[in-house]
Image (cartoon, rainbow, N blue to C red; front, side):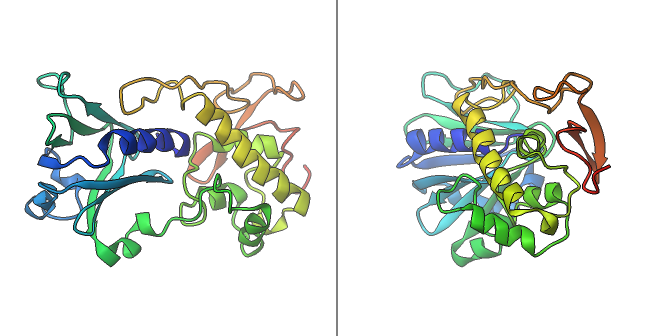
Length: 274
């Protein structure tokens, strides 16, 4: 599933190659990914792309006429740019295609599910993409801001920081290593974290995500041009029974709500100390 590092990379690439382009035609092959009828969605045709902004797990494509195209790859998918000289292979599967006036196009393909939404004007504020929390990588998001977020709830810290309305962009791919770097058990009630733990968590989010960004995202995820990322250096994530890089204990997998989490049982002790 693409998360903040992958979406940042794709969004920045889209901004570079698509800003200023005009959508000459749009085709929707899976209408259920839309939030409006196909006939209404096709009003994107003839509109110029004003800007592209990655936010959390969403890519926001601003169109002239105060419209915003919202793209989310859900549990996995691909956004691809095809220059005029390299059109999509005949018969290649995608859920949406956007042809550009210069002969290029970009396609959206979902492996399981995803979203191609269109909102206008102030309606963006009522869409889930308009209600995202801050990015943990924003310079303006400080440890004190994080402290305020955790102090007001007893939700588990894992659940809290995966809530996109609280913090945008962190999912189940990177949460394992973030919590390990902070030496925090995932079921710890958020409002019980000490100031030192909050500071470590703030640093862990920023440093952990930046490590992935520096390597272009996960090695099984691809960018706008089909290039794979290079990151696979997980510390505890997806390394069940392998030694913890800090203490050598066997990494465990525990149930946390509807998901599983990889932890070191010694570096991340259960909240009551057992």
